[in-house]
Image 1 (tube, helix red, strand yellow):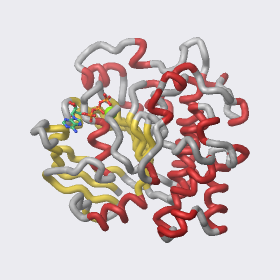
Image 2 (cartoon, protein in one colour):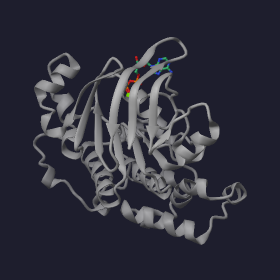
Image 3 (tube, helix red, strand yellow):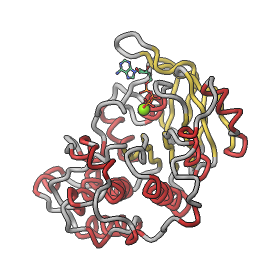
Image 4 (cartoon, helix red, strand yellow):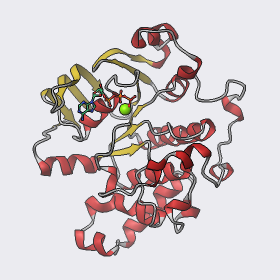
Length: 300
Ligand SMILES: Nc1ncnc2c1ncn2[C@@H]1O[C@H](COP(=O)(O)OP(=O)(O)OP(=O)(O)O)[C@@H](O)[C@H]1O
Ligand SMILES: [Mg+2]
């Protein structure tokens, strides 16, 4: 369970990123956070793993009070809360398997991580994680050789290898073409359903939010202005959140002519080559400085 009580975030420059947020997210929920650019979606999810420290109120994660000033508590928390990013944040020059093994860092003595001498049981967990997202056959490929959708699956497998209670995803499919975006969202949904992992996902496209989330949180100017089951997040409600009419682009990540049922489900049906969108996304090639996707990267 994640509980925000009257949480504020004031950034060092004095800008109020979150204002009086009250929220309770139960174990195993799939929550989509929507809102216009600058609404505070990234700020909200980054407070949950301490990437952005909150400055007032109380935030508890899994019953533990989050203390952004305590490095040891943050480390413990981040081993339980995995994060995936729009730009995947893989180390592209090493293998898929080694990327996933960095998810085992919290369970591995530093000398083993540094030498890459992971235990057999950790390798087993890494392979199982890759199997869960359907790309175990890519284990020995360099991460850079994978398509964007496959790279995001590796990022999901890395988070799974952490054995997390919560997965935070900041625009995880924004760099992917619509069919691939749906496939990655399906993976997340399956993981939430099969493993009971809480998923909190920021997204722009309402069709994706409505197709996969149980609950939608609407944000505006750092505040939660809608919170309810997906069935209640009608166009009129979202227009109220956005304070403007919806555009076709707000609604559909996938061409309306393509039915969801027509989309491929098997991972092997995915294109092997990066799409033009991914190739243009220079961020996708950036290595991470720390394992587990815990680095503070540029805001998206
Ligand atoms: N480090 C920072 N210092 C000062 N202001 C910040 C910082 N990070 C974010 N902000 C501001 O806080 C507000 C919320 O930003 P945030 O990144 O959470 O929005 P968002 O909803 O994720 O937007 P987007 O959809 O564009 O990703 C914005 O006005 C942003 O400029
Ligand atoms: Mg954002």
